[in-house]
Image (cartoon, rainbow, N blue to C red; front, side, top):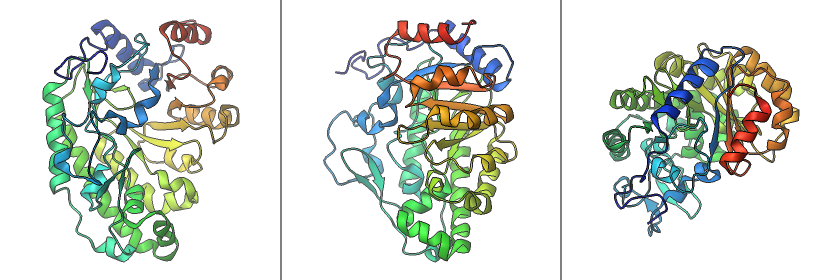
Length: 374
C-alpha cells in the first residue's frame, strides 16, 4: 500500500479543506480571471513526477501494447491518489483533480494508433501511410478507446471526493495527433509536400477533439461554483488547455495558416476559459496564439534546455500586458524573483515544481519574499 492511501485506494485524508479551497478559488477568480491589480496571484507547488503519469502503475504491465480494457483502477492510481503521496506543501493554491489516465494518448488512439507500452511512457504507433490517406479517413468519436474514456470519466465523477475536480485528460491538438499517425519525420515532410491534405486531415481530427470535449463537459457537473483542470487551477466555466507541441519545430506561419483556425473553432465551442500550452523551447508562434479570438491566455512550461527566465522576461511581460499566463517553473527557479519584479502580476498563475519548494516553510518564505499580501 502506498503512503497516505487507504485499502480502497482513496486518500485517507482530504488533500484540501473547505477553507483552503475557497481561498484558492477566490484567488483564481480575482487575480487570474478578473485580473484585479494589487493582489497576490495563485501559486501552486506540484510534484516533479506529476508529468510522468506512467508512474501511476500499481504493478508492472506485461504486454507490449495497452488495450482499453487494461486501463482500470486495478492497474493505475488516480491523480488524486497520487497527489496524496508524500505531499509536503498543503497551503498552496493547487487544487486536487483526477482525469482518465494521462499516460494514454487518448485522441491518437481514438484516431487509429495502437498504444505501445514502454518503461517510461505509452507511445502511439503510426497508422497512416500518407497525408492523402489521413485526409480520406472517416474519423469519428467512436470505438473502444472512446467508450473507455467516457466510462472512466463517469466513474471519476461518481467517486470523486469533495475536494477533487474531474478534469479533461491530456488531449493533444490536431498537429500532434497527425504527427503520431504518420510518424514525426513523415509529418514534417507532409507539411512541405502536401499541406492541403494535411489541413483536411487536421480538420477531421479537430471534429473528434470537439466531440470529446463536449462529451466530457456533458458528464462533469460544476463543483465549488466552477471547474478544475490538470494544471491545478479553477475556472468559472468549462476549461481546457490546448496544445500543438510538434509545431515548436515549425515556422509560426505553419501554425497561423493551418492550425490556428482549428484552435479558434475550439475556443468558439468551449468558451472563454480556454488556454494554450507552449514549451519554452518552442514558443515562436505565441503571438499568433494570442491572436486567436477569445483565447483566455497561455501556459508556458519552462525547460532547462531552453531560454532562461531572464531571456524570456520581455515575452512574459508582453503576454501579461495582453492576456493571462500560467507559468510552470520546471527550471530556472533562481531567476523567478527577478522576473516577478519586472512583470505584471494580474492574470498570472505560477506552478512550481517541488524540487524547488520542498516544504511548507519553503512555500511560505517564497510567498512572503515576493508579495506583501498573502
